[in-house]
Structure formats: C-alpha cells, structure tokens
Length: 332
Length: 304
Image (cartoon, rainbow over all chains, first blue to last red; front, side, top):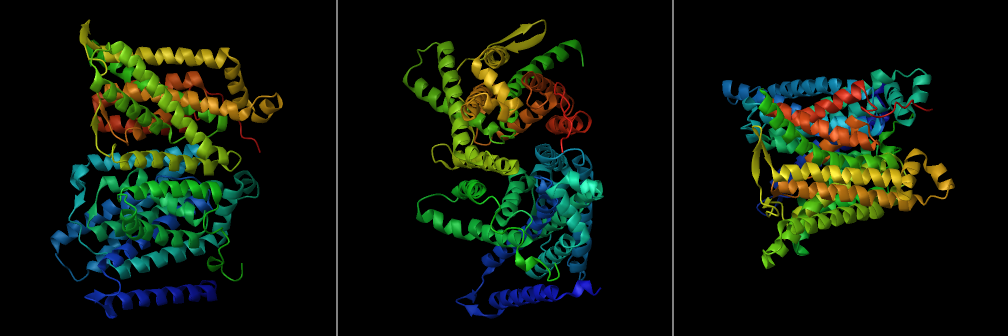
C-alpha cells in the first residue's frame, strides 16, 4: 500500500481535483451573460474529450506500450455501449427514475466493460500468432464483424441504433472514471507488468529469452484495453442517449488511433493532451474557422487526414515522447 | 441448392471475384516490394470510378454517336490512367519520405491517405458525399445459357480481368522491369548492388497496381452502377483478405484468392446475408490461424 501513495500520485490527484473544481466553478457558479462561463456546448465538448481520454489511453496500452497494432478499438467500445445501454434502458423501464440510478449505471458500465474484455480476450488469442500488419487487419476485421453483428440484431435496433438510453453520464462521473482509468493504466505501465509489456514492444524475441511470458502479457493488454474501451463506450452512449452502428465503424477507430499517434506512442500524457486538443479542434475551432475561409464543416476530416500525414512524416514520435515527465513516478 | 442455382452463383461469384482479384493484385505487388499494406488502395478504385464518371458524362453530353465498345475502351484508358496517377502521387508525396522509417509509420500514413482521399472527394462541392448513378457505358444485355442467366457486363468483367492478369504476368515474368520488381521484392539491398534503380521500380509497381485498381473501379461501377466516395473501403479490405488468402506478395496467389473470396462471398450471401457480410473476415482469421503464409505462399521462419 505504501507504494500506492507516492508523492506523484498525490500530485496527480491534486491537479485533477483543481481542474475539476475549476470546471465546476466556471460551468455552474461564475455567471457570464445569460448563463455561465462554460456553457452547455462547452461541457459536451469537455465530456467527449474525457471519453476520448479513456479510449485513447486504453488503446495506447495495446498499441503504444505493448506494441501490438490494434485498429479496431471502437469495436470494444460498441460492445460496452450496447451492453450497458440495453441494461440501463431495461432497468429504466422497470423502475423509472430510481434513486439508485448512479449505482445502477456504474454496475451497467462495469458489465459492459467486462463483456468488452471477454471479446478482447478472444481477439487477444489469435493476436498471439501474428503481428504488425496482419494483426492490424485482424483487429480491423473483428471491429467490422462486431459492427455487422450489431447491425443485424433487431433487439438492439439493428441499423436504427439503440434509442432512448437514459442520460446518466454527467461531467462528474465521466471525470472520475477518466481519472481512474488514467491512474490504473499509469500504475500498470510503471509496474513490473508494464515493464514486461514494454519489453515486448521493444523486442519480443529478446523479451521471450529473458523469461517474459509474452502470451500472457499480450492477452492482458488486450483484455485491459478492451475493458476500458467498453466503459468509455458506455459513458458515450449514456451521454448522447444513442448507440448507433455507424458510430463504431472503421473511421471512429481511426480517430482514436490518431489521438494516440498525435499524442505519442506509449505516452499517456500525450494521449490525454491530444484527446483534448483534437476534440476542441474538431468540435469548436474548425467549425468556427472553416466558414471564415469559405469551406464547409465537412472539410475538417480532410484537415485531420492531412494533419496525420504531416505528423507521420515530420514528427513520427508524436507530440510527447514516451518519457513525459508528468507520468513518471519519482523513483523510476 | 440445385445445379442451375449452383452455376448461376458460380458466375456471380466469378464476377465479384474478378474485381477483388484486380484490387488484390495491386495490394500484393506493393506489399511484395515495400512491405506496406497500402490501405489507400481501395480508394484508388474510387478515384478511377469517378474519373470515368466525369469522362463518360462529358462525352455522352456531347454525342451519343460513339459506339459503346469504343467508348468503353476510352473509359478504360481513363480509369487506368487515373488509378496509376493517384497511386504514384500518393507514393511520391507520402510514402517516399517514410521509406526508411519504421513500417508502422508508413501504415498509419496509408490510413491517412485513405481518409484524405475519401473525405476530400466527399467534401469537394462538385462531387459530394451522396450516391451518383453511373452512366450506362454499355447497355446490359441478358441471355440464358442452359438455365443460367448471363449478361454481357458479367462476361466483360471476367474477360477483362483475365486479360489484365495475363498482361501483368507477362510484364512481371518476361520484361526487364518485371525482373527488377521480382529482384527488389526478394532482396532490396542486393538488388541495389546489382544496379537496379529501386525508386524507379517502386514507382513502376505503384503505377501498375494503381492502374489495376482503376480498372477494378470501372468494372465495379459498371456492375453496381452507383458510385460514392466511400465505395472503395469494403472492396479494398476484402481484396486485402484475398491477397492474404492467396499468400501476400504472391501474384498468382492474389488472383486465386480474389476469385475464391468472390465465390465464397456470393455463396455465403445466398445462404444468409449476415454470413455474406462477415465471411471475408472470418476467412481472414481462419487463414491467419492455420496457414498464415496463405495458400500459395512460402513459409518463412522468424529471423532474430
């Protein structure tokens, strides 16, 4: 237990608490004009950014830390979203507006995450036999298979999507879960397990020779990454009150991948910062700037793509290298 | 399934398979030479289809007097040129600077190029994200042979694919450039020491691969006369599966894999549409689990 309460942990929690208080103050206390400084639209952007933090850091565990190239991450999120969404919708119909809504929501999220983790386990198994490009295609294929299956299950709405999910996500819940995700992943990365995962990324053969159980750690990376992705997907579904197969396609997964790559492979701090920057860019800055230069909002994806290519050519390590100081506990 | 249905689906499968095979050839050639899965390859197909769309609409707006077969040949040349051009552009603008970087960077860049092409076409005001009806370059004529319905477009698809494959086999096996391509795919450094211009060989590979994707584009647009900027995603992915099925880097393998995958998909769809959508990826996973080198590929041991 002593190791859990290092100074850096306190610092992380302190910063998080300060940030939280600041956002709450700006959005609910300090008035500006008709409403508050941070209006509802801003809060939605912040919430989406936080969900992207969860998705990107969990993908970073698979891609950046363990070095497995997975590009079907939204498939896990879809499972979390649909499972938790179906559960809460059912319960909501039975006991409308129950007092225990939040605790039910947390349980539903956990169940969604566990279902995603089970699928992550299933995907992790074939991942043991292949790597690099092949693994990329397999994970992509799995993502597409999941989407196709959802598209054909009438109980969850099929191509119409799952409608009428109760709005249970709010800033506080999303913030706390994002913080927990980051802390868990951070401790994982700097534990001996995380070192083992890093060694697989650096040189799988050498890691195997010094006795790292490659099989175990690859599967664990997929299971843990999928779990958090499932939780993130559940949060997203309960925020926008809708789960739709098109949200979890191919390009949604690439968006998460872009966050990870722009942030820097293996850098959790980078993922967090990139999640905020890119979400604000997409939802706030580009819709404002693009009309000024006479382009439609749809050009933002073109700009995204160009950004990705430019970053890959000129700064392939991303915004942050892996040794981002904020993420490293002192005694490392 | 009676015999007539069996043959009917076989023809349909060969038609779809010929399109997959053409795309798979481009994938496999590029992979063989620079070990890059060119995710944007499916989008070259889309570019080819749009080029033909504008060309054919332009021509048909002026005159209807051109015989369909001449018009088709002109359109085919346009699609080959458009596919080759866009492939070479993406090669020299994005893949070339990344040539000696980790392969993952090139892979991500390929994803970026794919996204760029799709959204760029969807954002251009005169193209837009909506579906467009592809003009009738050749009128569809159906006829019955022994209870099996055939049409001229089916025969054209299969015939053209086979002609292009023969042409490709000739280029790869009988010309100096083909020899250079085979040499580079076997050992880049040794090939350079023998005086082969690597960059020119890679450029040539992209040109041929892109041209084949462009041809697949016009065939696909004629078969399913509806084009949109995202039309290349799924055929591209499935063609990649076809390339893996045949053994990636192996040219006859890509042809075999393409036809097998097309046939498998049509039979699966006739059985159950959900199965049809997912079968390509199921095949992919089975192949990677049990025969990762593909049907015709050679087993490679891991080097340390």
